[in-house]
Image (tube, rainbow over all chains, first blue to last red; front, side, top):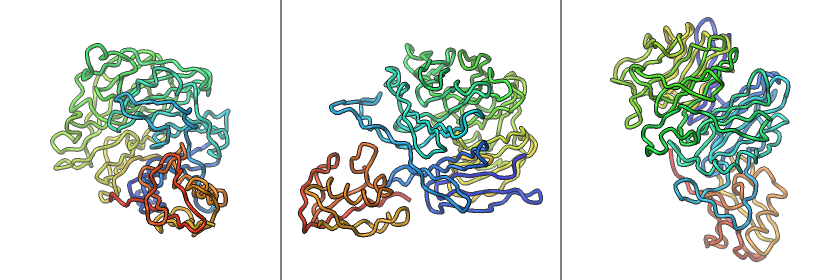
Amino acid sequence: MTDTLLVSTRKGLFTVARESGRWDVAKVDFLGDNVTLTLTDSRSGGHCFAALDHGHFGVKLHRSTATGWEEIPAPAYPPKPEGLEEDDAWGRPLAWSTARIWALAAGGADEPGVIWCGTLPGGLFRSRDHGGSWEFVRSLWDNPLRKRWAGGGADLPGIHSILVDPRNSKRVSIAVSTGGIWLTEDAGATWTLRGEGMRAEYMPVELTHDPVSQDVHCLAQCPAAPHRMWVQHHNGIFVSSDEGKTFTEITGVEPSAFGFPVVVHPREPDTAWFVPEIKDEKRIPHGGRLAVTRTRDGGKTFDVLTRGLPQSHAYDVVYRHALALDAGGDRLAFGSTTGGLWVSEDQGDGWACVSHTLPPIYAVRFA
Amino acid sequence: MTRVIFTANIQRHVGCPEAEASGRTVREVLEGVFAANPGARSYVLDDQAALRKHMAVFVDGHGIRDRACLSDAVTETSTVYVFQALSGG
């Protein structure tokens, strides 16, 4: 089990550690700065990457060293061809410039040094040298359907989920908000649009089932059973038994099928966790009661887990990267927009509050 | 040589001491400074080498007009100030 959590917040990176059965803040890095995401690469002795967004000064990337942190190049878009005018799906000029690092994933065990990075406004990057340099995955950017990707919650479209197939590192699935699910089977040379069966009821009827119009909030894949994928979608919860080729909608989920994150058990493909909110018009917990939902039977039934979570006037929103499950499958943690951080040691049956006064939390990861 | 002065706010993230460089445009002068201090470049310019959206450059007290190509003229006696617009919480 993992005894360390990395909590990315609006005002710094908080390392939370478990000592004598109790979780507490052990270290703060980048205090005062906007840390949006981290990745711990267990293949390379625990290299950690931290994405920062300095606003005026742009998006930056840092890598841990033996003594602290070093800034490394952030993924940067290639020069826009002279004379090319490109608008986004809403008709606004699209800047070829990294607006946010929204996904970081280590490559397979057989390709040490490979790191994938997804960004707003939709560019995918790969490093082959532990983040020392980045190559732009041109094949995806040049796909004509990429121009139909659109901003959802953010102004710009972005890649937020990157899943490297544990059986074959050349197979990588990504998910886009909004832009559906895409798969490469040749390490990024070519891409196929996936996700038949997802549904966006708020779209014009012609586009309701259009795979590229789907607003996937988060995509998760069971490591021991990669055929099983779970999607927390803007429109609800969907499950796939064929690696994301087709999905089935899970209906009747109480208190809600709306939310942002999903995590799946590392060995039990039918077990997954979600954080429900009142759907998109409000995006707050139902009745001010914070809950996590868990299915153990592939979505037929859900447990509503509330023990240890605030059940009165709680308005915590949990973003897509802010729910984490450790590799053992028992420990969970999540952080909220109002600075609450909770940990469970028993698959979500009970929760302990680590803090309710942290800065707004964007991402939680077991180190 | 043209003087280039950076905002104090950037110094917390990357060292940008006052510098001098030669050139006929803001682009030429700034690229001269960044050649000697490459880590600072991405803090001021975006991926397309345009001035970042919330950055500002003044030449002798006047804001530059060409934020994309940085073609505004400078002289050897000019002073270039690189600022940011503070906002947010």
